[in-house]
Length: 159
Length: 153
Image (tube, rainbow over all chains, first blue to last red; front, side, top):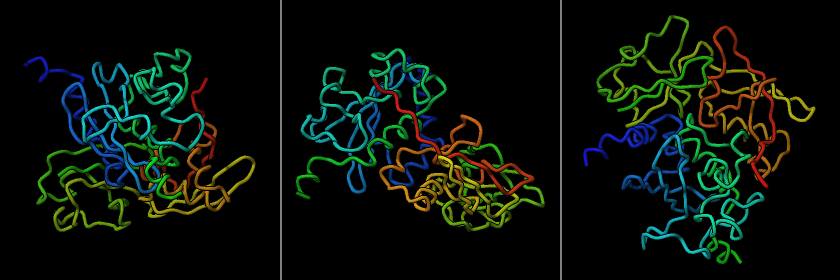
């Protein structure tokens, strides 16, 4: 139990929840921290102009290892069903039905652990995670992709 | 409360934690006579001698310490040039949205753009106030508006 309290990754994670970049996003309503049960943490991130979705991050090894995110259903505390994932936005989609389910349900982004592990050539790209990155970077990258997206429920309602 | 304080030319903030709201800004940072302190979100210059409670900040506040109040921006985009003006506290994301609009770029296409310091690969943090990238001694900044490079394949 003492080990968890002293985990340097957890300490840094908690500090990164208070950085200007992360708090700026919180104050603009782009994302927010919901809860932490180390090494997991749950966040809400806005989708499009009016929606939001939950994402759970696995944070062991943070920040040397990139966060590993997956869409999360807060009501049942489990992975969000594929039918409820956000769609639209730039190609390739951030949560890809043809890729994410077989890759830990992770976002197809160079800031995420699973996508990086599967694309070793991404490490040298400008949008890749490295140990100097922080939570604000992860959520900026994720939010950028979700900004032009929408949730299926809203798309059905609009139809 | 917590204060994130941006200074000229750094693009970054120094964070002061656990500040008593009866403290004044002047007790946190030395501000020289030529500098002004602005509260991000209000474009309001604050009196550095009054308490932060009197300034009216919440649990978290972002400040910019700068000699300029407004900055002149010269933006280059695919061979086109545009001049913009912004308050030092304006967030980079808002400057980008405004610039894209003036260039006739749609909202969805604007989501694919980033600012870089002209002639470099240094991307501006969209969450930072634009004034934080403007060094003391000048009130202007030259930027390139470029398409971000996504990792794919």
